[in-house]
Length: 169
Image (cartoon, rainbow, N blue to C red; front, side):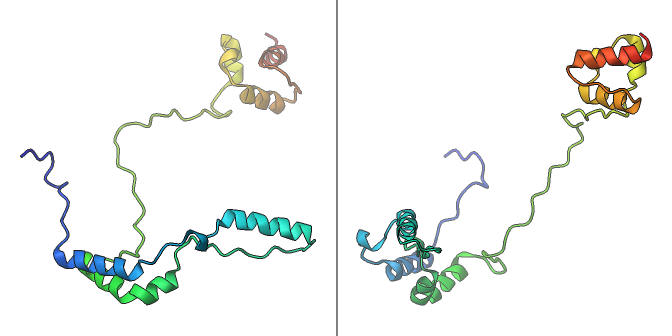
């Protein structure tokens, strides 16, 4: 028999655990009557229509009968549920406890994204001398022009022309 990984094998439940689960199911089983469960979305809609028609300021709250009644479950099978938890979970394990925060895996590889260059990193005058202003971003050009007191707006080419005119190129 081929087993790809020996740590994937599921642990089977013993007969005591199975019997306890069957007891819980017997305690919580009831005769299903579809008329007992109203659609909560429709009921809320009807309540709003009723409030509008009768000119009420507030809408009655709708009780959602499709959600489990925790108090009733606790009354009917609370002790059985506790016994089942003791049978299934190991000592010291708390199923109610939230898991800890996940940590990122440590990696020695450089990050995939390049950091953005800010306007301080780019020397607009040097780029203008080289004729590389088309590679400079619009926010950097606008920040440079604002810093030297030249008001300019519009398209990137207009900003490049304003920088060249200011520098005399």
